[in-house]
Length: 241
Image (tube, rainbow, N blue to C red; front, top):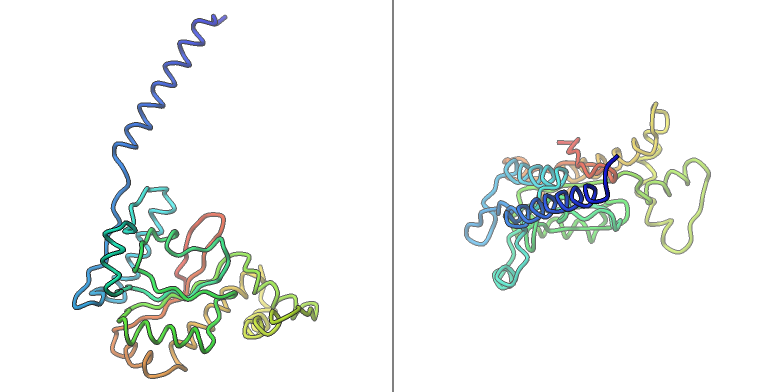
């Protein structure tokens, strides 16, 4: 039988080891994020290099690697003179989806366009074109996510002829075709619809937009990719490249 003294001694030893481990981790500190190079006020990354930087950041996020993104006073003063983001990111307004956190990025690195269901209307499209034509971003990412409420609402319209108050119904109208296209597929219809909604927007940006976006894609200076974020695992799947 273990005595009370032995129990206390063991607890003290374990506590000391834990404190040592925590102290060592704290002493090591977070890893500085790999910054995108800037030349003449614009990012120097190619489309593939920009995508690799996002993939690297999400890998660190998945592995709980502490990363120090540029967010301090020095960085604020630097970007007050101008911004040079390396990607335009179109994603949902959902509070659980935050690109800067998912990729360990800091101030001035991602030009983010957010609305429910990651659709692209006139305002969003103009914002994307500004990011490409004026800020020189080489990469556009359109990202949906697991359990998207806007896609669920569009699915409810298709499945149950549901209606929604205010402007919600009009907001989800662009998503309904994405749901209709996958309703005969086997498997998880909601997941199919979420991904198809992303792919439809990606296709729009690749083929039916202004030369502001089409011309740099033809010359390889711009890439548009589609992604899906898993809320539970934290993984971003760039499934439409």
